[in-house]
Structures are given as C-alpha cells and as structure tokens.
Length: 135
Image (cartoon, rainbow, N blue to C red):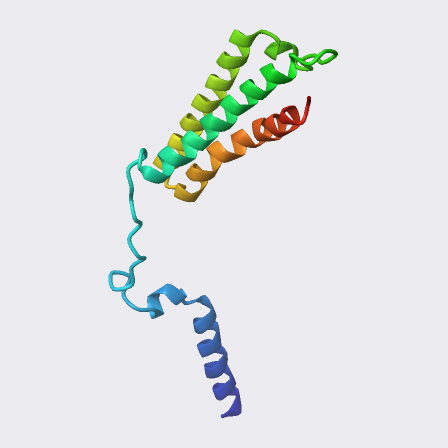
C-alpha cells in the first residue's frame, strides 16, 4: 500500500512540475498590461529637449569663436577650425540626435528618446563651459 501511495505522490509532483503554470493561471484575456501612453514625436517635451540640445551646440560655437580671439589659443579639433565646417558639424549632430530619437520613438522607447539629444549635447556643453573660462 505504501508503494502505491509513493507512486501516486511521485506522479502528482511530476505532473505539477511538468504541467505549464500558464494553464493554471487566470485567463490571459482578463489579465492585460496597462495601455502604453502614446504621444506625438514633436510634443512639447521633445521640442524642448531638442531646443536645449541646439542651444548647447550654438553656445559651443559661440564660445569657441570668442575664445579663439584670445592671443595664443588655437582650435584643437582640425575639423572645427573652419567656422562653416563647425556649424555644419553641429547641425549634423543635432539632426542625428533627432533621427535617433525618432527611431527610439517608433520602437516604443519613449524615455530614451528624450535622453538622446541631451546626451549628444553633453560634450558640447563641457566644451562651451571650458571655452567660456578662456579670457
């Protein structure tokens, strides 16, 4: 009798381990994730973040030009020595930030889409702060 009880208990435990837990759970139609709040790409927050990025890039160009007027200073980046090239490079950086943010928006990464333009502006903000200290 004890052997039959052990076999029965073993069968119940084996069935519980092998049986998919999702079949024991509630109906999947009843359990739903909260709806994702969708927003337009050019909403107020994104426009603000992208504007901050563009302002940071403009500050970098402006402070670099004013720092280069000080005798003995020179532009360390050879690609940025020409003002037209510097403006084109900063414009391309802002455009790339907007493009990457748009791809993140389309893939549903809404928090990351707001951070990308700011992260792309950090090196320019550091450069602008450094250049502002040159007298």
